[in-house]
Amino acid sequence: MANGTLNNCTVTGNTAAGGPPGPGRGGGVDNLARIRNCIVYFNIATNPVYAVSSNYYDSPLTYCCSAPLAGGAGNITNAPLFVDQAGGDYYLQSNSPCINSGYNAYTTNSTDLDGNPRIVGGTVDIGGYEFQSPASVISYAWLQQYGLPTDGSADYMDPDGDGLNDWQEWIAGTDPTNLLSVLRLLNPTNNVSGVGVSWQSVSGRSYWLERSTNLGTLPPFSLLKSNITGQASMTSYTDTNAIGDGPFFYRVGVQQ
Image 1 (tube, one colour):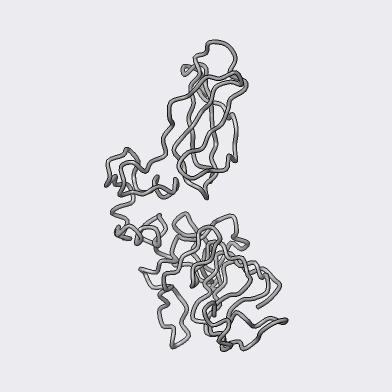
Image 2: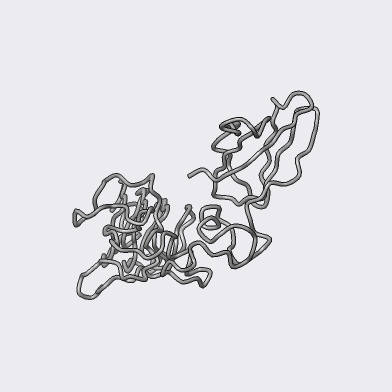
């Protein structure tokens, strides 16, 4: 496939022998195809120059299952674990890393290839078929990365004791096995421009920041800024409207 967009598709078992200037360098997708929530696996590029990237070439992948690891957000390299790849059965096994590992905003249909609900468990699966009875609401690939069970038993546990359960750590992009890896506000600072608000953060996430001057009001907080691009280690924002002595209260969350 070249020069197009694929959302929630399965591209597997293809062979291509192309090379420049035309497509075919990637056995699955090639030539600036936009690939989202897709499985692009077990494809072959017979031209040895491009064999290392036999599944894709010159194509941006996001929230996809493919190898080698693509540079876009949310990509995984784990084998997709089809029910019967040799027999052409591309449904997902119950422990497939593709379950709950896509990005809902890229979903264009309400049903999958079978006409079943496209999103089951809260988060869309990667690939053409949605697994209809996930045990966990968390990305299976994420759980497997940290050696956590996918049967739902770990979803609301807090193994590192940092105050956030595994579901919250998944949303925040933090490490559920590391006490120091947690979404947390740091001490604010005062400067001539206003109040500097900082928090522990990760890249690849967007954040919202809210402020309150009276916790007794309903609702106590109002939105200060949304879609703040997360930085590795720490993200900061200067509240230029924090005028006077306060008090000022802040809270931060992940944009979903």
